[in-house]
Length: 210
Image 1 (tube, rainbow, N blue to C red):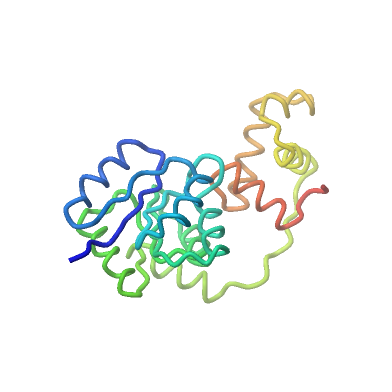
Image 2: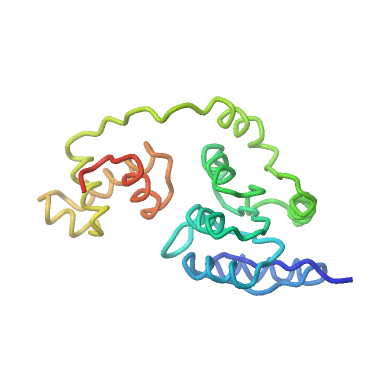
């Protein structure tokens, strides 16, 4: 019997190695990828049956990995494994093409169950998030206009331009802590968890001039 092929995309070494040990007896584990941009090419080349994907990846986020994989038409089943029990994030991942959303604290039995569900064409959601995720997806409407303060807009513009907090602080003559606090607040407001996601949202929603 041919084993189903699994690719692990996670830059946390202990987590990734633990997944390899857990799955090796029942699946053909193709390897570990620790970079989001590399993951897109690896998935397209290897065509795994299942991808276990962390959202917080270097270079490009897991959400962007999902979008690129969808754009390339790769037929695979992606289960997001994350530390964030966030219904909004789960809904966004499902819209981007994920087939499952599971917390890293889940039991090994639940992970195996989730893999089985998606391989059979289903969608697996962590039970604690199911109700909220379904509500968000059913009631999703047009994105409301986001009003930013002048400081938030200036900080966001420079983040999009590729500047780091210290550089932004020098450019705007602000304390570095103030810049970091403003950036963190922007991430909260937009519901994102990385600089890459913040930049993408700013571009997609045209929050700053380019």
